[in-house]
Image (cartoon, rainbow, N blue to C red; front, side, top):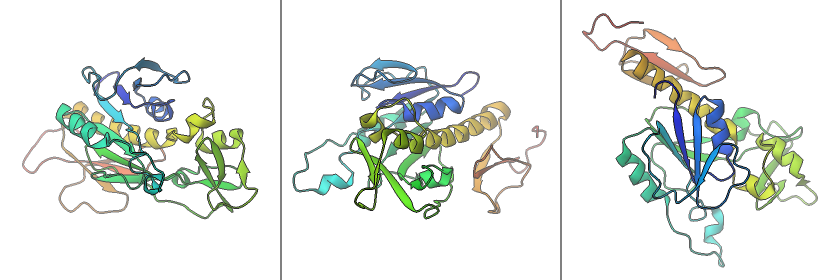
Length: 262
């Protein structure tokens, strides 16, 4: 991951995740089996399960969530295949850094949960929660805490519409308000319902860049610790705090190694 970092965006949808990675400094290429006329970057209509992984530094995958979402338990729910398990096996086999995103309830490994309130997302009087799980390899990223309850309403963006998640009568939200809450201005209502807020993947993308710069730029091992948490195994040499992030990167010399640059 040196120079111009390339990220492959599998099951890309209309590009919410892609925009976050772009803002973090990646060149993004999107893959989806359906046409995505509003995707903001290079796009190829293809099967994400078989698209070649060569030539990319990082891979992101957002396999369909219907198998794991709350609606799956309804009496009239349709059967949906589990694409998460086979795509994880494929990404692990590649040996590349990867991110898998899905809903709460999905069978993720070593995951974090990101929430819109941690990034101050929402409208003037409604907060966006939109919890999503992210399995990140290499592991070590720390999720910023949720900040629920700072606004009087909660905006839900799903099913092509927006309403207060408490199901209160007369609590609808316009397309413009949903776009504002998600910080996505280029999607229609149906696309927004399936989207990941770019703030989530920008946060993850900046973490991946920090890891790449330390590993490839200096040849040093590293450990990632939560802000304020002491590292008992390593001697701190320098800390790097990314802009508005909640993680610390600790660079250290293995015991007995001399001469590595700070």
